[in-house]
Amino acid sequence: METTEKPGRKIGNLILRALSALAALAVSYGCLRWDVVHASGWAWAVLIAAFSLLCLREFFRLAVECDIRPFTPLGLVCGPLWILCQEWELSGESAGLLAASPSWILLLFAATAAMLLQLTRRSNKNALTNVAATLLGLVYCAVNYVYCGVGRLRHFGA
Image (cartoon, rainbow, N blue to C red; front, side, top):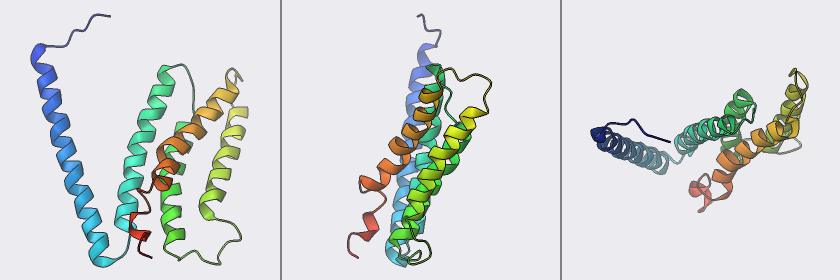
């Protein structure tokens, strides 16, 4: 495959990525600082949810390039919501409201909705792959953040 990029374009792209990374670091520091000062945790959770939204969008774009048709809108809604549900649970505000964990109810809803949405498509070609790609995107880009500790940073001292 031949590239038609101009030689100066790569350097411009590198500078743009570096500036974007610096901006992301500044926003991350600001959110973490806000949460430490105000002891809330919600600014950090919203930031992580936004990052997961970007990761999910990229994940689903790559899946579409591989001829897989995940349920992108469902994943883009449920992924960040899952992270916010985790913060809600960890903050103790959800105690006693539901019999089960809200985040796991949301994940069960996403799995059921993906299977039902697959039934509405004209073709059932790669049905299992489409549903699995949607759920893998959620687990890889949203659930993974929380259980790797990124979403639980402020709760270590609690």
